[in-house]
Length: 237
Image (tube, rainbow, N blue to C red; front, side, top):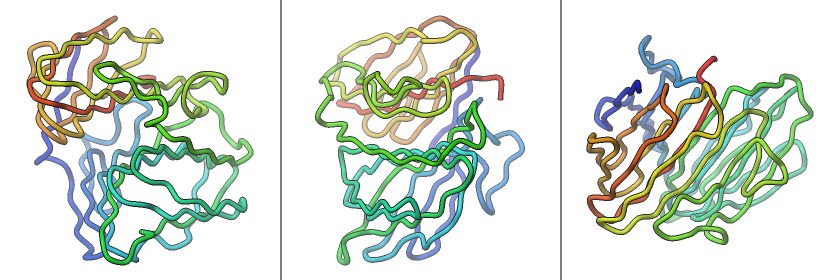
């Protein structure tokens, strides 16, 4: 088993006033040659956007872009004709493919919105752009991992063009669980959203990240009430 630990305080940081962002991997003005990506996981940004502010219309191509709101509401618009709001308990996905332009704004004027912005390198280029969103809370199971993303359109959650699986886990203190890899050659990156969790003897605190690969499974124990995001991705990127 191989592992890599990213403590929350070692992440890149950019404070633009309207945007306060922490980068687990190199992004924009934050560059760390040793933290370019974890397999197909290219970007993991922990963003807080001030009331009424946001990202103006900008383009993407050949990237799978996933947004998970943690607090508040995010207004989305794109040139595919989508105008939606994603909120706490939702997950949003865009396959940028041949090219898409979109904007993301805090829908509320008087309180911030917090969300994870995640980019996955696709296994298929130049696809027709697509958009989807679902409510995670509608499928969540307490004290267990709930699948929220996969490569299969007919499976639970949203889907993307990559052999990637995402899970959300909400655990009471003292609960244990295990994870078995879905595909040989993949790795798993665990990101702690709340609480404290122990994985194979390694204690992780809020916003810590742990990468695990070259193993078939691993075990987890919640030290306190905890919430985690588990991302299984191909390592050969």
